[in-house]
Length: 292
Image 1 (cartoon, rainbow, N blue to C red):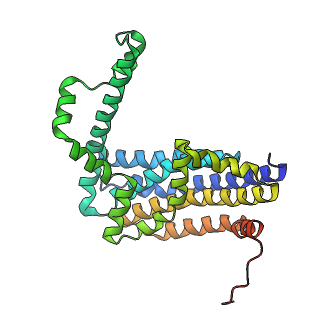
Image 2: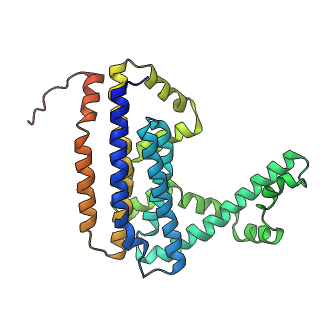
Image 3: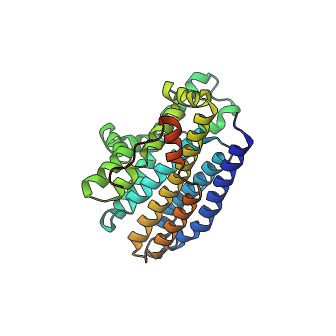
């Protein structure tokens, strides 16, 4: 569907983005190895950083092959990991409580939900004692632990924790505290919302890609390159948010963050003004800026 030139462009830009991301990842080392945390805290935060890095790389590899809609879905995971990481590290005063809520309370509530779903699956299977279903049975909570979790986490408590750790809850906490992280992240949530439609295969999720494919080549190619650029930009924006949040918390010199941002901007400049190119193809030449 796409011509050889476009295929070459998307691969080149995605690969250069991937190589730059790999070059920048070591900047997170002072955060990942911060001596002020316990080994468990470092492990928890390290898993969030590893998850973000792994999924970011996957999104860029998908972009290299033009699978931008699937890249959006993967970036949705990066968005959530970034939000949680930044939220945990927002303040020193709340750090201990938030990392406990994330790794213990929210985790236990997730185990409760999974236990309920697995019991439903097993009841539908019939022969639940079969060796075939042992991997499922092994994921069930022991009765004593199940009762303990139900007593510890009422339905109201579960809803409160899940709401607090949802995207809307975290963004609202940032907004109420006046933290500028909120405005930076809100600007990235168009892709997050779009990925929700794609992931759930609702009518928007299946019709938007179909509309793209049906466009005449000039329109389709222009918006494809603009979409590619935005996907790459989002991946780096999430990285910068994690880096900024980490350096701020450990009070590290922010110079490497500024250097990273400069390198990211330099990469985007090599892409050209793909957004304006698409706007011109889609809507025609705009009027001259009166302020100019």
